[in-house]
Image (cartoon, rainbow, N blue to C red; front, top):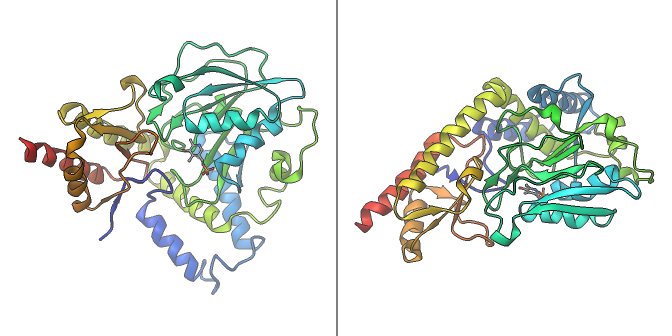
Length: 357
Ligand SMILES: *Cc1c(COP(=O)(O)O)cnc(C)c1O
């Protein structure tokens, strides 16, 4: 039986994407060859790469606005170092917002390259909220933040208004809601949360930001090299890019980001309403900062853990336990998660309530 997969990443993808990518492993485009054995420079794959890059800009409304979309290896984690390498000027400084484990990991890497100012942090409260009312230094080379904190279940609802270039780690909420993407200098995301399998990272970058640091950059770490070579400087993660391409097509054919956002709002509302209504559960994130992608909650009384775990497992749910630094439960309800699966979880929560009365 196909499980209801609430895993935080790698995570659920549309069923249609599983089927098409499985087919391409057996026979890619009727070529008599598997997608796994073709040259990345073959005509058919170059077309996939070009279309995937164009689709990203189209979905974000960035076509013809001075942006490039490229697919890279190394995970979102490599961007933690590649961003300062490409943007932090010799003698300059970068500003960071510390909203969780991934933000902290990005800050750690930036420190290798120069002055790194953490302008606000919610660490003292186990990252249960998004800091507000901070000031971004006007002389910073860029301001980096995480739009959705996958582990702690918080999500940025308001975006800073500043002339400093915005760099955003959107790994776990990219393509989940409409934003004015032209406000960003760099957006990056590991594919495996809302777009594809592990192995590819999407980077969307405004070209005018590059070439200003005054330092030489090794080729593989230089965004300009990857842009100039149209994401083919070296062998790209072919299968991960192809599968991401299928997801992007699925997104476009189903109404784009606007339609995905409406569904995501409905799913999040259904689940948060149950967490707030059901006397056995409590959410961990501050209400106004709750994530619509990763819903974190606890049992008020841990004595019910065994029984609740039995109930959701019997309902065919997988991947529900929370990250070890938060505990409890985390329901990741990315774009591909149908509302019917969220209802199955809500039913299990209600069943627990009934069995206890
Ligand atoms: C998962 C995640 C990462 C790390 O991604 P890798 O691809 O494993 O390097 C970084 N940032 C956020 C917000 C994430 O959710």
